[in-house]
Length: 184
Image 1 (tube, one colour):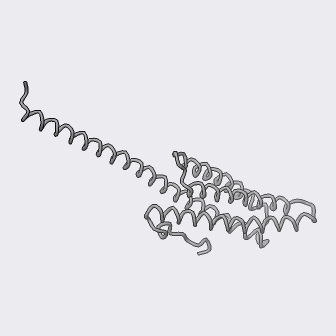
Image 2 (image 1 turned 90 degrees about the horizontal axis):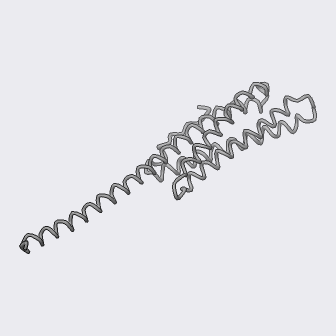
Image 3 (image 1 turned 60 degrees about the vertical axis):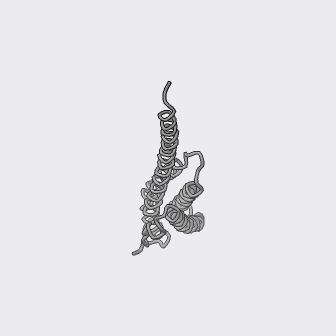
């Protein structure tokens, strides 16, 4: 029969070992979740930065069309390219929220990118009316381009606000996004 002086310390050692193993397992599990969430947040900030850049470049072109500095036909390739880019960004932003609980900022970012898509569609509609032959549709086309331009600017600002919120939540601070004005 084994000695009680050996079994008791072994039982205590085994119990403490199990407790330590459980704590280490929980730390690794929680650490992995935090790492994945931080990766999602960094990806969302990067998507917002790229969307902002694309929308800023498009806003300059649309502003020139709106002010009649360039022909509406010139904006067509840029509108289509930016619309496709926004669709990719929207898909990327939506895929970020595939976790069990989708954070509200991911859903907000995806919604604002979709808002930018709708603004681009409105600008494209107005551009099509401006290039048409019917004189009576030019006024409606100008209005659609102007409304779409304003919606585009508002969506861009909302995307920036979402990215600043994500940066603040992730601990990077709102200044971590380092936005720049498109005209400077």
